[in-house]
Structure formats: structure tokens, C-alpha cells
Length: 369
Image (cartoon, rainbow, N blue to C red; front, top):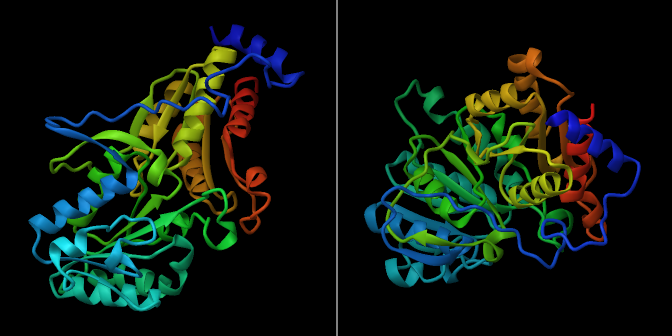
């Protein structure tokens, strides 16, 4: 079957893949139907977008943990993306409050609270602004338990922050810094892609016994909508999700990139007859090596895609592990479809981001190798 598809791909390589026939996976006018995750014993559900699901998750955490507190720049009146709206009215100004514009101070304060037994949920307003707090997160939070020989810890710490491209953010409101933190022992790094998963992963992160950096795809805050269970549930950290099963090629991503990849996968299936296995990593560190390795051994081909620059991005770590674990199963070189090694551009964002067309081209290239 794949051999026949390769001939079809070769015929497409010599001409543009843009079609004059409307295609639901390549046209901007048609929404991408992203498959929702089934939650066992979900109970009553309510339609929520991603920021509402995050708000609902924090509401549950605050209800069930009297030591939980939420703070950050402007969170008292709901935050710039409205993720904390209504929570100060419900829980009071002593549990939901604003901070000065000082990310290092936010992180340091959160570490101290966690070390004293509280459950801090700190917000860094944009992931681009997390770097002033880098020393506190990497040298203090991540190492607190280790350097005290297990006598002290700040494992109840969760730091939330919106990341990624949004269409008009430029170089200070569009970055994806997950790989900076994924390389740090002592931290867990989580990135959801849907409202259902955002709520479940956030609750798991808040209750995790290690510090967690929880990056939220701000592009999806309002555009991603699902029927979300209103009750309490968790999604385990460190476990990837196979969004779509396939047999010809493995496609790996996370966060907002998942809808881009689903669009590319649909194009490959409809135009080329290629069966793609789509994996949402969900947790960057620790990432689900077993699920990825099992998939790549089955398909023999793999593409990893993220918005962050290619050099030193998390795709490089995944590629190295696949090369070590799956070398004799690979039928083609591992492909990385990522942002360019430049500052994030404002007017050239459409050229910078690894969109569905770039990923579709990479699928064709990998299949015919």
C-alpha cells in the first residue's frame, strides 16, 4: 500500500500541492475538528474554551486545598487572558492577589510559600517574561530538595504562563521557551493542547510533588472549545496521547502545534493516502519515551514539529533518543519542522511558524526518501 502511495507522492513533488478544489484540511474557512479526550466517569459536562477550563481547574484546586493561593501580575481582576476571573471574589484577596511587576520576585515568593507548606499557583503573564525568574526557577526551585538532602522541598509549586505565537505578538509575546526548562533536572514541564486536557493536566500539576512549569497555548485560549467535565479529574503527567493512529509515519507535537499537525495529517491522508500516527507529547519533561519509540518502530518514519527555534529545541532531544532507540527501524532521516533560528518576527510571523503546509511538505519528503 505504501509503495503505491509513494508513486502518488512523487507525482505531487513535481508540481504545487495547492489545489483549486476546496479541501476541508487545507482551507482556512473550514475548522479543524480536533478529537476530544474521553475522561472516564466524566459526569456532567459544560462547554468551555481553554481559558475557562483552566479557570475551572484552579477553582477546584482552591476549593479542595485551603492552602492553595494564586498570584501574579493582574491576576486579581482576572488576568490579561481572563484565566483567573471571578476567583478573587470567591476566595478573597488573601488567596488571589496581584504582585509587583517583578518575575524574579514572583518566583522567589512562590518558592518560599511552597517551602512553608502552601500550594502556590504563580502566573508569569507571558512566557517571554519568565527569563528574569530563570535563576529562581532553575537554581532554587529545581534544586531545593536535592541540595537539602531531602529535608526541604518546594514541590507544591506550579508556575503557569501563556506561550507561543498568537498572530501579532512579535518577539516579546510569542516565544516558546519550553526547552530551556526541559533540560533542568528537578522540574516538570507540561503543555496542554485542549480544554479537557488543560484542566486535567493543570490539576495534576498543582498536586504534583515536584515543581511544574505549565505553559498554556494562548492562541487556543478562546479558539479551542470542548465539552469539559465540570468535576474533579486529573490526567497523568509524563504520558503522551495518541491522537490519531496510523502506520506509515509518526508525527509528534504539543500545545497549539497539534491543530497544525492534524491539518497536515488530514491533507496527507486525503491527498496522498498516507496513514499518519499523530502523538501529543503533553508533558515535555518527563516525556513519554516508550509511546514514541513504540510508534516509530511501527512506522519507521518520524517528524517532530514545534514553534520554538530548531537549534536546541526539544525536537532535538526527541530525535537523539529516537536515533538511539530506533536506529535499525528507521526508513528515513528524522525530520524536524520548527521555527527558524531568528528572533520571532512580527510582520513575518506567517513565514516563521511551522504551519501545516511546511509539515505536509515534510511528510511527502519523508515518505519518498
